[in-house]
Length: 254
Ligand code: 13P
Image 1 (cartoon, rainbow, N blue to C red):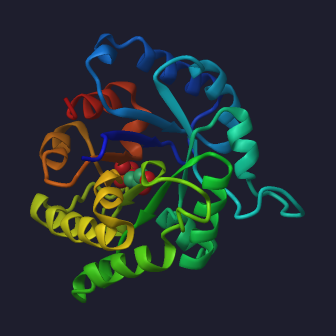
Image 2 (spheres, protein in one colour; image 1 turned 120 degrees about the vertical axis):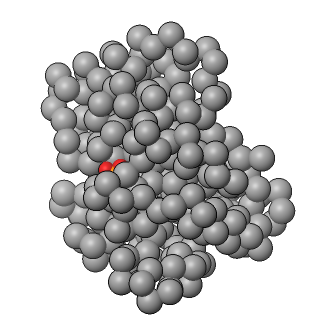
């Protein structure tokens, strides 16, 4: 069985005081003792250091939103996975559709980034998902399976176990649109992803990887989405910017 994971992707939102207030509010919740889910917040890179300091010794994990495939070097403006780890991050999102679209990231590049993240000791949150056009062409499963086959990091190369990998299925058309996939669509995709992970990583490894759903997850649809078989948690954008909403979704894992 995969562990539960609730991750917030703040994208390019927030400043120092916003981050401090949001984290403070989350830390003040009374239900932490009951929550079994791994809770991760992924602030903008420039806030990773201060959020990691604020959450040190607490149950909140901190993640980056992207990293370079090299640990260091002449890569102006990019984020080193080793530096993210040094600042206190434990996770990093790779292959988000906004990176694929805005920066032309390829499956090969994403695999290299995920492997660099693993080498740096980070847990990659590896994102996949089809566009609206691909969905209407009936290509959803083919697209996400190709993204996994071509982009999944080689765990042995980075000397890591499957417990160091998280996969997030985020249909591109559901991101920030208020549209969500139906529970039966999500069930179909997640079942296919689980089968593929078992094929690639073996029974034990494939069952261990948490499979998150992302795309307009809100408090009012979290119960339904999180109760789908093989949905082990959520990757949350807009609703992760509001402590009450993010927390309500986290509580839906109970
Ligand atoms: P929304 O929850 O705002 O749709 O964003 C989802 C997402 O892209 C998380 O990575």
